[in-house]
Picture 1 (cartoon, rainbow, N blue to C red):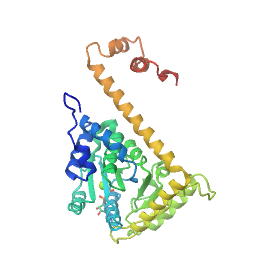
Picture 2 (cartoon, rainbow, N blue to C red):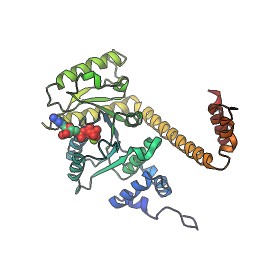
Picture 3 (tube, helix red, strand yellow):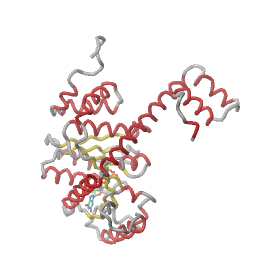
Picture 4 (tube, rainbow, N blue to C red):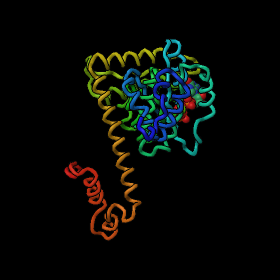
Length: 333
Ligand SMILES: Nc1nc2c(ncn2[C@@H]2O[C@H](COP(=O)(O)OP(=O)(O)OP(=O)(O)O)[C@@H](O)[C@H]2O)c(=O)[nH]1
Ligand SMILES: [Mg+2]
């Protein structure tokens, strides 16, 4: 705390560590707004993180993700865990934010101090979705929640990408959406450490699970069974019949144990850290660029150079980046 007064509210981080929910809620708002208070609190909290298992869930809109998360909360509570949920809400004009169903589901946990659900609007962050969601996860981690579940709709690149920044990623597939494989975007099967067929009470669920098992063996490399290779299981869950959730939690535990046993956990944590830092760098550079572009003589004249066709936008960008990071090797790629 400086003589001029630190922007950090004294004690916010401490109160979060003590389990103060209101302090945690306030911290999350600061983090979402990229407020310096949130960053300063995270400085204090970060050494208390690294304990929680971060679970990503992604899949098609309306695929039953939130309902599944709700069942997972119930099952984790029965096991004595404190559970935090980050629901990235695409805020599409179609859904207009959290659905009534989501709100009712959240109300169920209103009085439970061991459940914390936070919705984040993805449009508010632009390209900065990943680092803010992960920063929120750090806050939950420091506050003692484990696991932390991150739900995103698997439509935009950002949303799929962020779910894959978890330690265990669940890819949801839903039966009865026409041709089963049609709903699966190329390449998206690989991000699933566990593939979950939701709404398994529907008659098409078995066919979909079978097709996914075949597709998995076709697309995911080694056919060889080896303990160092994770074989993504295909599991079925039904919220209607209250089936499959415990098996899913067991599979998540098994994946976690596999990560630890094979050393993949350290690799994964490193990948996540690199991704988080990289997106932060991108966001910071973007902010600098936007600020510079609005100054008089924007970007020190390079805009004029581009308009006058003396310089390509590509070269203008490189010139600006080397001005910001003079020793960087950005042009050498
Ligand atoms: N039959 C059946 N319907 C389900 C099941 N789980 C969810 N649903 C229904 O599927 C619809 C969508 O469920 P959500 O859990 O909101 O799906 P979501 O994937 O979170 O949706 P978005 O977040 O809007 O993309 C709701 O009408 C649920 O009642 C299930 O196990 N069986
Ligand atoms: Mg949802």
